[in-house]
Length: 471
Image (cartoon, rainbow, N blue to C red; front, side, top):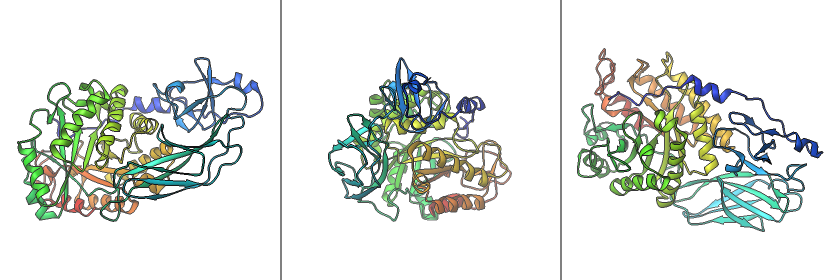
């Protein structure tokens, strides 16, 4: 078994994402000639809001800026493209609504907004591509939500000619504990499959840490989940560790997937089957968070499997509104590669309620892991802003970092001091998740190399965990 789920940022994938980035200008508003000259839609192309393309003989107008991907054909992604009959892409459509304000209860979010200009038949409220409300006035209430859950809505005015540009708002229902409702406690990975796993109660007493990310749920054959693909969900060492954590007032995050092993994403035949496998784990374990480590060619680079997982997560949220959903994936030093950007954009297009996007900023061959972590995180922030239209603060609030303590697979060094720097940067920016691989390695062995049961450097026992607990 490899020591860690390595992330290789393929140069070819990145190159594809950068191919053909000639910006398509906003559509002109004058004559039918513009419509007849609309370029054919193509993948791996940057489209600006208002751009007009032709696909299968139908002209479409771009609703939000994005870089196209295979599978995002205009007819298949109504969140990104809308058919237009010719001439002005939105002849007579109303203007955008005014700024949106929100108020919340533990189970609902109420929105109100300024009236749009032009002729307005009413307003539609979307969450991703799903319409949540259609009203004639300038307010709406979305009910039936879970306590302490975050939702992003887009309000659009409409009339017979079409819809306006959208106005976004993000809000979190009440019923949370702590100062930041979306923030998760620092939760280093704990793996009961190797590396002389410590008793989590001992680590909690020594460090004050209150949460662990338990790894990994894999397939034990077909779409059946098991710890490491072989240990039962209940009755074994994993359940004993979780019981200990909860008995001491802690919580657990459960991680699915990882770099290697037989994973549920490729083995489950449909989003519904994948969600059912996840539900088995939630019912058995009772986690506060489910973390999906989407890595390697079988999940991260396989877009059919990516979409199966993302659509499955929509079902998981519907059935478990109080369980937070995290996706974790690799990164380059400048942010997500083409596969990561595609994952983010597709989550937005499909309306998947992901609470946190966590990157793994290591295995770069880095000589300055702090600066590379910051740069990669800023790249993630920009990708989230481009996909969701968020502010810096909103993007940071949906971000996490999962590092590697001591020596990484590529001999990068993250010292206790550097990990403290990374933690403090994450806190200062309002990130909401912090983890590292792994508690099993949070012990000293200077000169010991990259091993499963110690960090390879000089440190105190549980020093990285103590720092993570301060997140």
